[in-house]
Length: 255
Image 1 (cartoon, rainbow, N blue to C red):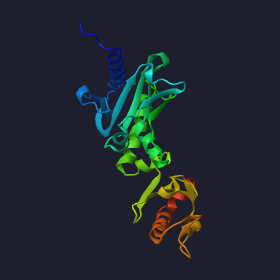
Image 2: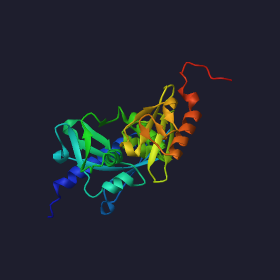
Image 3: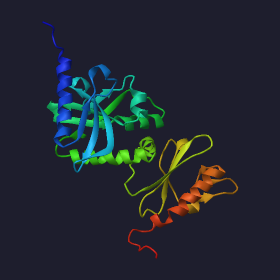
Image 4: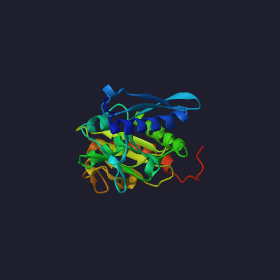
């Protein structure tokens, strides 16, 4: 009789655990046939209030001790890097390790984009031992991913990943691309006296900026950052259009 590999049993158990958790909470899970598995095992669509949402992710599932490390787990990227980083759906990696408490997860797309920003090649996705996924925190997990997908649809999720920052739901985020196709982002939080500039040439490090720092002569700049005319005028427009959002939160709105 043909012998069934142990790796298949472990893999199936892992996929079933992830699927059972999500379906137990009403979400739609479609398993990708093994013959068509090119780095993702599940396609998940989130459900809210009994209604299907527009929010979907792909999931790569791993099981067993082979991916275990002292601090958590690592899932090898292999030749999936570009697809996981730039595909139409964000890709999550979920590990099933019952000896350590069950399921653990990480956003592979975000980690790969951050590595790109740092001009590195990520060979594996790091999953922390603290990143547990279970019945207790599934709602928080879903809310987190739906917020992530909302920024993706606005076209700025990639830049948050590159800079390794989190945009809040009420933040004002304005992207810009100069004539050399170099992106930058103006980011204003509610009630903060300054904005944040995320800039391709600055390795996406968040730089606090204020309107008085902006200069047009003799050379366009904001603080120590050199700009061109288009970038400087864009920043001025951003500052002027978000002045109301920098007011202290306890300050009444003007009539």
